[in-house]
Image 1 (cartoon, rainbow, N blue to C red):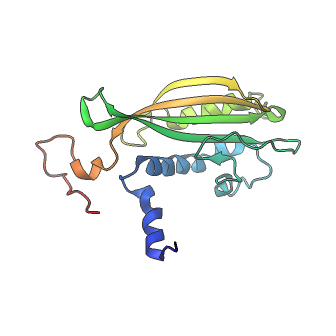
Image 2 (cartoon, rainbow, N blue to C red; image 1 turned 120 degrees about the horizontal axis):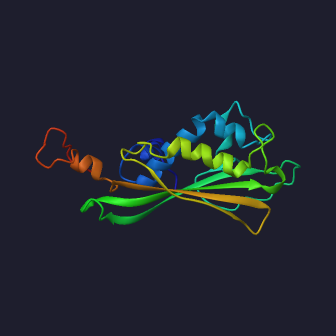
Image 3 (tube, helix red, strand yellow; image 1 turned 30 degrees about the vertical axis):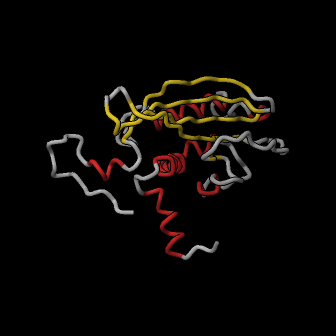
Length: 198
């Protein structure tokens, strides 16, 4: 199936609409990671261009919007990665509303054992990167509600990587509800926007 340019643009623009929180939230997370020069620097990837943060993304990059144990890199330095993903658990009973949903943003910091300690700070790289991620995202209002860090857990893998998992809880409007419901006050009709017609 060949897509027209208009169809390609329409699909690519899902990162800007409220119909799919996974795509939209991942896009915002990528922007925050890309703009954080400390995270880019302390990933310590000589095979990528620190002055071009976009080179850190994608299947050959160090930051991936999915969790997959990376391939073992055979250079002396090894490879360090940040993977992240989002999961949703349905309605949020915390708010007593079917219009809200509970979710988690999960970061996986994987550091090659050959490059575990940062020479500039003396800190374990997986701890350092996790601290920078928490500084960037914890208690932020990136998605219109406060992100709460609920898990910060070290572990290891079957390979040569040391892993730290950081999980943020989020209570958000269900996908597509922002345009449908506008204001959270049902008596305030000033901000209500008609549902998007598909």
